[in-house]
Image (cartoon, rainbow, N blue to C red; front, side, top):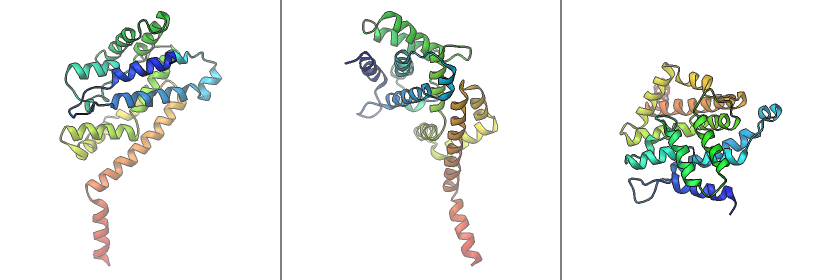
Length: 232
């Protein structure tokens, strides 16, 4: 196995957590795989290539795999489900815990200097002030994963577990719109303009899904059909 394959396997073991069913919950692991795909493609964006930025892809991808390790640990220790995970992956010192776990898991597996860099990438990805290229890429990749169809599915999952279902998703979306939450995320959550534009596209897709959920929840399409029948 290559070093990266070993890192990937250790991350998988860390991110798959117990669930309320007989099967373990792999949601964070699948998120990790999405994030890795995000960072790999962000590395190839013309914006970065034209800037001639030096990117340590091994350390970046390794950091990405472990960036939710702290969240996995928190869920296990507090007997919480992954359904509450995706809204708070950067908060409450979780990135620092992720870095600590990466350091512990990778000790003796790869060079110490690489481990230190991986740890720094994880922690700095939560800072708006970082100038470390790898940390900025990881930050954009994580923020991008929160926006769009996947973000809606994650919210739906949380609200279903909380007993609110689609109504809760729609209410929460309206609240975010009213407070300008998404505009703030688009403005402050991305370091690279091309990723920001992609996030805008994903947000538009999410709005389409929300609008369709609203139509079906309130049976507006059925109401329109009924009104047309009366007119006939």
